[in-house]
Figure (tube, helix red, strand yellow):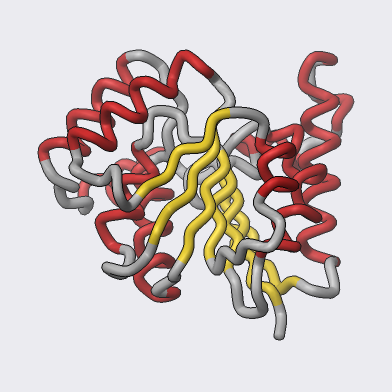
Length: 215
């Protein structure tokens, strides 16, 4: 936990319902230990979507479709989401949730490896990108993501502080965690020092980086 749990609980208590369907999807996902975004992260994401009013959203990491549907609730009427998911067992649940929400025409689900899809999407433009997939791949995917973003585009990267572990020395962690720890620190350094980006790293949820591609 990055922020005092009492503060997080209070912030979460202020949240209003996102509708019976999304509330049930959230409950089902948490009971099944499916990794979905935390409530405070969801609130930030909805706020950024509302402010940016994007035309095309790219999401990397669909899971069961919860975050896609959160964004769908607040995005402009003419906006479309393209979301990528590799884990085959979660894809049917995501498609069913999109159907239940009546959002099938507003959300396109691409099955397979994100790195391969970033290459296949070359030539497309996405003015808002939400990155919430394999944390060790963030840095490898960044060049492909930036190639798809126009100037002024927004990139939101979730889980970047790893419950605060990103701030620790790698030697303070178990050996099994050191590789992803190093890769995430490299990714955050790249975001903060990339000449094409302006980035803020926030201690919201499990850590969120908000980057804007410079003009």
